[in-house]
Image (cartoon, rainbow, N blue to C red):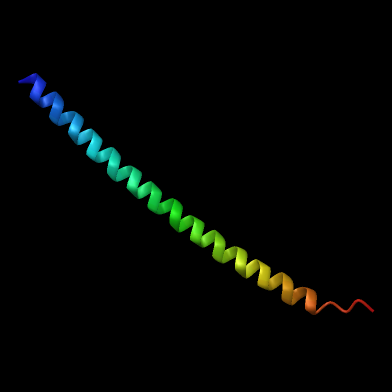
Amino acid sequence: MEEINGKQSIKTHIMDATEVNAQHALELEQASKERRMRSKEQIKAEVIGNNNIDYK
């Protein structure tokens, strides 16, 4: 009986770990997208700012 419970426990642990890994991968992907968007906004701000500088 213990052997069956042990196997079920291992399966449950593996399923939980798989869900956690999937959630972590999703969070990393979302963070990456957010960083790219912030980077694009920063580049736009720098380009616009450089166009407004009067070097004379």
